[in-house]
Amino acid sequence: MLPFLHRMKKIIITIDGWSSCGKSTLAKQLAKSLGYVYIDSGAMYRAITLYFLRNHIDWTDVKEVNGALNNILLHFEFNPKSQQSEIFLNDENVEYVIRDLVVAEKVSDVAAIKEVREFAVAQQQKMGEQKGIVMDGRDIGTTVFPNAELKIFMTADSAIRVERRFKELYEKNPNITIEEVKANLELRDYIDSHREISPLRKADDAFVLDNTNLTMSEQFEIVFLRVAKVLL
Ligand code: DC
Image (cartoon, rainbow, N blue to C red; front, side, top):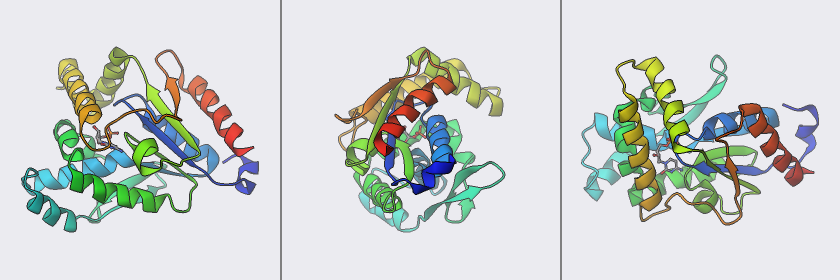
């Protein structure tokens, strides 16, 4: 954390945008430099999806969904080894298993369910009560924290996003193909931006960051200037 920052007011920073734009990389960098908590809201939808898949929940049936949500406890714990907060589903660390394509293929459908969104959003808003957080997702600046002090909307060329996600998934599963990854990203972006409740869209007061041609450090510098403007 930068030394003078502990004396400053704490704010909420929201990062929304398309899949695989590098939202979490930026969010983690920001949280680290500001001494803030980073919350990956997508991990919550992924963990709920994992629970539904494992327990064969029919998520077209509201009763089943509500029953299942009553049995789900989510929390984040900071892991000093990986230097990041990791998500727990009923006391099991599921941070890595939720990144699987099996979960990615269903998560947008599950995240479109009203009851699921209400469940996740209520918890996300609680996590922001003390401020000093960076949260990334799809509806954070529009629905979860409409009064956040700094809102970022990230985008990048779709071919670049596919390539980035492919590289990430290929490391864990060399059988994966680029076509599969492309199809999944396109489908998720479509469902996420066309669903009825809290679809992905830029908040009117969000600042757009297109990182197609930016390095990670260039991107960080641009955003950090914005943070400084709000804090100083
Ligand atoms: O950020 P991610 O790719 O891990 O998110 C997984 C899915 O969760 C994404 O396809 C849409 C959904 N999601 C959402 O609907 N709202 C959020 N705030 C975060 C994620």
